[in-house]
Image (cartoon, rainbow, N blue to C red; front, side, top):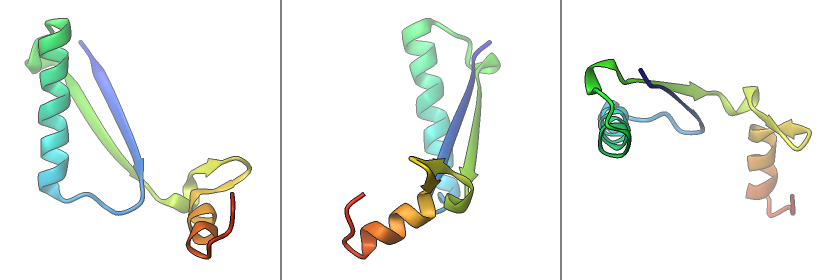
Length: 72
């Protein structure tokens, strides 16, 4: 019983994009691992860039710096 957790930051996905991700990820587990799609669970978490940190700062601040042309 696979459980796949997809975490993303940034722009919110449209419902159609989320559905496509769910369908394609499920298909990979069916095709590659022979898993039953009825017991393959996909969770999509959209995380605010202010709540995701990398290299000692938030993704939101890193994106702002990049937009100003600053090297990271």
